Length: 421
Image: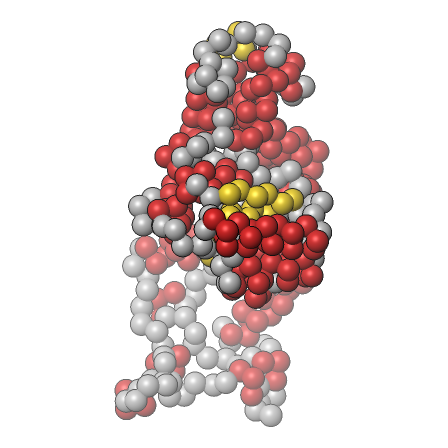
């Protein structure tokens, strides 16, 4: 089912439109060096094959898993010989190029520099971390995106209908199609593998047939319907209730159902401030790190990072003081309680500011004991408003104690610094 032309390629429309570098490569005879970076099953090998097929260039594939410097140099020598004798160009495709060490990548440089081949390297890892700078700087980096549900659905429907696939000899039930879409997780190759396995068992491919073929139960989960909202709601409320086991259950349900891991990560990041906040400030760090890890490595490994963050969030002491504080502040602003910024706090760095009195009388807190000095900070309309009311949970307890002393001092209380240093 591999596409034979760019028009047959499903997904990656941002790379295949008119005037894009990839389209120009296909339409011109000039050699070019490319890196294709994206998750598995998004079409990296397919695009390299299509470029070779459409442009009538030789296609030579090397796997970085098994090839060495000798193999690389032999492929380049053959390409130079073919170019010199027949004028025919070669597409040198290196799969998993991030697995090449520095010496192996160095061996590619002469061919790239002298345009002896059209070099295309495929990688699932960030090439800025795994590819040497000289090679990367001489190549164009194209980023592939995970295929959408609609893309995977189109791949499967085409495979069922076309003679190159099942040729219309099998019936794929709508529920089975949706189950295959969920199982694929944006990976077209995986979806076709599962479809082929199911087709070996029966001509009428149902959910039960797919479950038997791939040994995975169908998770009843509609990412656009009630299940999506019910499960994510239960997930968040389980973390809020400090039940790590329940939270992990709902996390597993979402992962197995094919929920976008980036969506799950975003909800965890929000939770870390909304429901934990200052009671454990490190919770937000863990959540953000997990979100970045998922973005970098994807699934299945990213599920470990998500579980790490979920357990941290669930077992952390809880406080909603942060979300209440910003909610109250925004509420006052929307009511019109804004007021003028006090003159001594206004920007005094531009010409003419001094004539307007901006910054006049400002006291620099670092010049005083405890780094504190009593002066007006908020506009007069909200000077007595109290937004942040910390709890006494976890790490927020000492914060609450310190904030109480600071607030009392700023409003005229007993903490009196001993004057300027």
